[in-house]
Image (tube, rainbow, N blue to C red; front, side, top):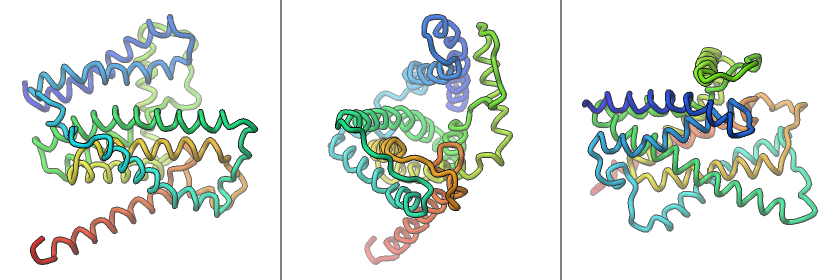
Length: 288
């Protein structure tokens, strides 16, 4: 079986199996069906990952960039970098009045739990998303096409997946075995309303491009750490601040998550440009 066929089957299967799994999960778990579908698809992506590796004859995780050399040290440095990268954005939102600090809870327990949960959640998100997207998918697409095209495809997928949500007016009055497919179709149709979320989409696309370049220049552990740092920063910042709906600068952040948007896209584009300039200067030095 060709490499492209394996990738297509893997992506198709994780959505198909996830939609099928959602119905029996809904009968067992008392939770929102949309949330169950998204978690079922994610679970299938993880469960089908090993068969996909076997089908592509990938014998070790090192082949997709998971280095075993000082992983904890690398992960901690990358996590710190990820947290630091978003500090200017957060400062800007506080400075312009778009977000304001909420008073901390009387007990230190709530802030501590919030920070701990954000760190663990970030590590899980970073591990799963980076291993599948920039570890597995990008490494395989690199063998089928140019690196530039591979990076574009991976990050179009990465950014678009964040907006796979059914429209606000979408409802399922009764849940059937096929309701997962109905919801997924509605979620994909919402991508056609690009004008509603283009700014967050662009910011996430640029963030993905940054991670893809890190993957090319280094190893996947750096991608996981940076991604985990971003998630932790976002969760902690949004937990301890609130949105000011009367702020004049509120248009700089999208309604999607009240953080990503025009300003974050400009910041990430600036970082990519600065990185590119530094790389050009470095390569022009004698002996480099």
